[in-house]
Image (cartoon, rainbow, N blue to C red; front, side, top):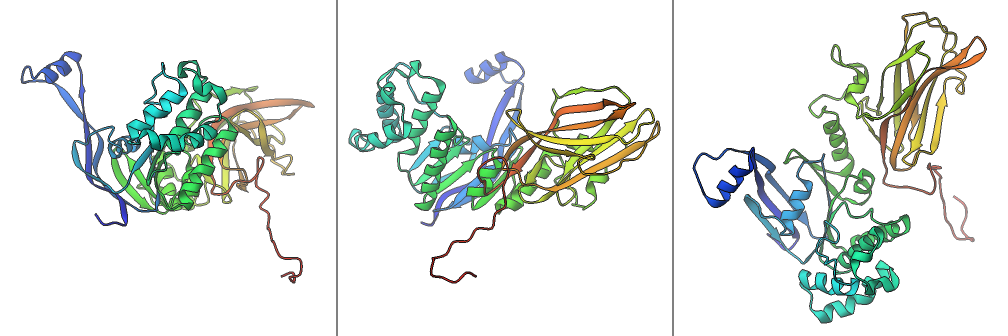
Length: 426
């Protein structure tokens, strides 16, 4: 392992034994009996990777892919079954915030307890105390027992302790979205300071926008195995295929229309199991999906790229000029944007009973990075009265991946120039 490498992992494997009965577990622990029934579960299987000094590397994957396991092995929380881990530098880990806190101690006492556990002397903690207290910003509560803290104060203090240790290597596991929006902003600024200082960062997150923005390189894990490594955009695209079980399928610009016999587009989507629906029953959404610019059905869209929401509606009576609609809400339930065929001045005709119509809404994704809920509607005017034929509320989500967010709900896509007053305009 040379001096330019901060973390070197070779053939890392972690196996857990799964027992059908607790008594088998006890027999194994006490070395009693020979025929003990258990199954082996590979949390990690023969994973090798390296992280260069000063590099920010992200690890992504579905739940159960081994992301947190690999971080716990690197930080010494878990021991590997096989394999080797070499570390070059002092580590600070943002894993389970506050895991080492004693609830009966005050905030100050826990700062010294955690600092000592990491390996700092009391004098070194004294030097960092003001930085920790200023970052946590919980006032005189720091002199109270932490069991009296709100959840927000608890995570603020835990994060402040972990982030102000000044490590050479920072390990982060889903820890940058703690507290309120202002504290989150402070956390991200501190994270960016680490990058500017040339610190080594290993970063696990489900927030693909943060992965895209901060990481130099990304590693994709699936079911304990490393299946991809490369630049963020490339590996995020691979991850999108993993999410819908299409990793081994060849990308086709018309893939959204090519499904197996009996298979629906929505079968390839992650759907909301608790969506709400109602309608007159005169028409029904038979199928729906979203797909990206490559034609891949997905719940994940890259900000700035073109995408399509596609609908299939079956009619049970003759209906004149049905209106098809798509709308976007944020996670708080606020409707952000939407459109329909009437707004777009599109005549939809008069479908007869048994007819199936397909509507596509194609647009550039200008919403900020984040999570959005999609609602679908088929409505119209029947005998002069507004009628809802079928409406699906929050039927699926779209995750927007962005490496640049601006203020508000959407990006104005501004072209910005700055020049000195005496310089000629270009």
